[in-house]
Image (cartoon, rainbow, N blue to C red; front, side):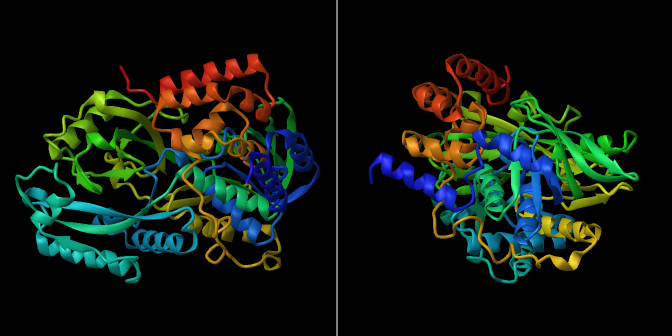
Length: 522
């Protein structure tokens, strides 16, 4: 198939699947539609929580819109450990409900959305000084299997010391008594979020990025809509809706103050940092779960695409809810922890290929000193004016969070019986028969059709949108990102509708972004 034919086919498929307006060029039409109609539901926030609520509502037949202040998955949902996992560690805190939900949602994804979520084995080495007896650990693993209804893709398997070292030849041998092989799943968090948004658009929803909400419309002290602006054209619009959901994540409290300026704080932010190493620098053959020698926090060393992703830290952060900047404390914590288990690997700061940090939104009312002990359950608040705020939760359990949020939406809708029941447990996200990669990657970026698809039916509006969240297989190298931007400058300018000076201005801004958020702190 020639490049021209392929591009024509992709555009035809985009139109056929309802994504013909999901692009930068169509924004004026989308804003006109947003401001001229009344919606059953309007969602603030385009992370995985807002995206999941958006899709659930669209599948039920609601007239629904979503507004994102920056870009879809640009906050927490694009800076996770990129796992769909059952949450074995939650059993330690006796959070059986969350473990049960996470296990079942992981298994549902592996069955229903295997085009997005891939199974992954994890090795957990067991040491004599772990503080957990062999019997206790075996009971815990079987409880984990029971939490999934004994329906895991594969059951766990205990390994001898020799079998463990065959899989992980670089592991510290002193005190090693064996290991356990368990199975979870990996995902591209940005791709999962974006495909969820796109699927809702296919089912009639309207989604616009770079459109921050700046105020609320009210009728008799009840919220009846929002005021938003288009950051690209600087236009200001009003959108009316029967119900408004605040799914703004780290920015949830800011949205709540637009409703009532003296609200108490609901969100606390915990910073999590990840490091990326070249696969050749890590003497392992499989993804591995380690426990930090400092605080026994579980750390994931995840093998993917020739690299190892390692994290994450968990520290309270009182900064503004923009993307957090990596700090030296987190880098040293991770590297020192890793060297404890891989003493001969020569891993140090110079081996770090890439770094990123993200915020977890945790319930602010829990004044605990250790953020790792704070629940990962979701929390839903309904204000006196009717604003529904959803915070917390996990990437894995976003679908169930959305289902719970929609219960509150239906109560406020005035006629809950008119909508179809939840179908997200039956309908695959996007096309289940189509393998969707973790991003087009370096080799696919060279195909013009991939660029056209990102700009034509994925609402990429800036260089950062394009490279950071549409071509996210490039995210392990700052140099590769910048090189590819200049290599395909003419095509990018054509697709994004920008001229040469505008490209250079965005390029310079993105280069500073990489230096600030994806480079090791000095």
